[in-house]
Length: 73
Image 1: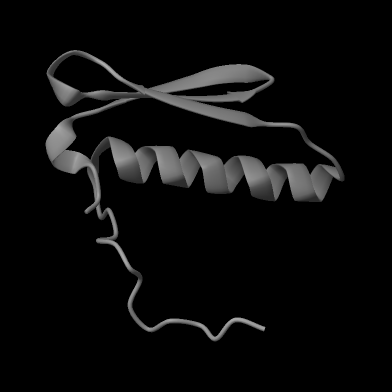
Image 2: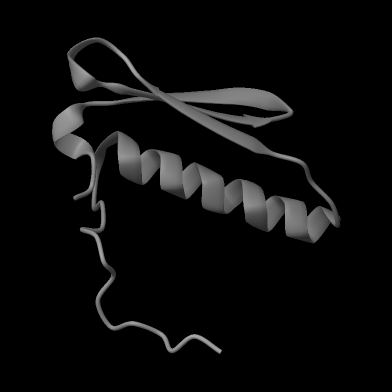
């Protein structure tokens, strides 16, 4: 069993598109668990200026454009 870590190995997003994407993903997983089944996919690619185009497909697509400075390090 893995021991819980006090500090994650990356910086947690507190605001911006990363936080919105993570909140949406959490909501989708919770909804799917309540429903009993789900099938989601997540894709990301680097676009102009280092922006990440993140797409969560869950019945419909949820798209997020994440500026490079918001990418957790």
